[in-house]
Amino acid sequence: MKYRPINSELFIKNRKNFMAQMKPKSIAVFNSNDIYPIGADSTMPFEQHRDIFYLSGVDQEESVLFLFPDSPNENLREVLFVRETNEHISVWEGEKLTKKAATKTSGIQTIYWLQDLEKVLFEMSTYADTFYINTNEHYRANVETETREDRFSKWLLAKYPAHSVAKSNPILQSLRSVKDQIELDLMQQACNITEKGFRRILDFVKPGVWEYEIEAELLHEFVRNRSKGFAYTPIIASGNNANVLHYTENNQQCKDGDLILFDTAAEYANYSSDLSRTVPVSGKFTDRQKAVYNAVNYVKKEATKLLVPGTIWKEYHVEVGKLMTSELLKLGLLDKSDVQNEDKNWPAYKKYFMHGTSHHIGLDTHDYGLLHEPMQANNVFTVEPGIYIPDEGFGIRLEDDVVIQEQGEPFNLMGNIPIEADEIEDIMN
Ligand code: GLY
Ligand code: MN
Ligand code: MN
Image (cartoon, rainbow, N blue to C red; front, side):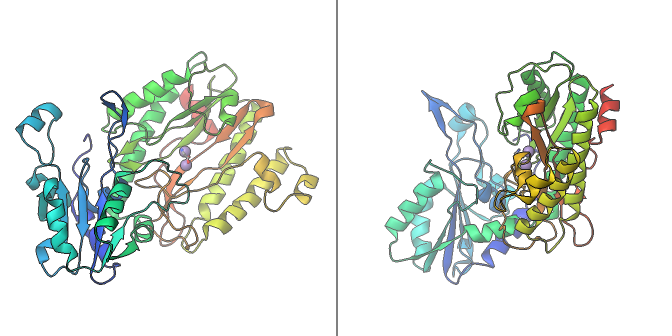
């Protein structure tokens, strides 16, 4: 891991909060992700499952966590299994968690090697009535792969058919959406690394530069600051590429007169940041580009003010739609009849702004959070309006990450990252 050690108080508290919501006499189980194969003996880089990370801080494959708050044996209330390490493994694969290191990372006292799992689980199961299993119920989830967690759940329920089953996911969706101060500090670090990357490319962008050269600059800056790299697949979209919302080829040359839309941000300690900025290749916006840019920036500022405790995500999007409609009218992109005749299920503004304005962010870029529940302090959201105009050869999106406060406007974790059009021009020149 490139990141600095995280205070285990965070994971101790997260487990306590989770266990407080479990039914009597129940055991919750959580697994690491698999390491996914590519072909032959090559693999994708390991990415820890965010839930076991949230509950233990353990960032290693083949780890399993059991939580059993009512265990009569107090040593079995929190149990972590990690793969056995030995000298051979440390020579070939490098350092893996020892039992002592696993305790230091997680704050869990009872650590076993993985091969003891079945025996320990059997002992625990005889005192339990219910297993909490962890299925993925994120509103955007679209998973065809059978995860390690899925395989474990199947095995568990087949082996213990007399136990009843409960869902961990709703508990995690609500807990993970409210960030602890330690998490906010980690997210701030991710945003600070993202800022360094963005400032570096403001200096680097010139007519003729290739999108992938910008990607390389960002990656360099992220990794040298202890990030694994991009928090999500980077979008570096010049000219009309910006109008392909999920453009990730990043293989075109940036032309004088075009804009470049960057949706590029660093992770830090598995926490995401999510930034979008749009800058002129030449260092100077045309009047039209600037007018559209300022409209997006205005909608972003006004939308941000709506992110306060009590706001309902769906109603917020309706309000942002109204703000955007009024800007599009001023820009001449819509006229009054477009708005009068609009389909309420797909309002006129969607022609130019067809994605959502905000999503939860945290350990996942599109993080957990129950959308029908009112917003509350320490929820972290992106704010990311855009206007996409293929007929004019450019698209603009601006995106920051903000923390909802008990009172007043949200705190912008990206408040130091240049966004005003004039400021961008000044720095680029
Ligand atoms: N970068 C992904 C998003 O903005 O939602
Ligand atoms: Mn983004
Ligand atoms: Mn986003």
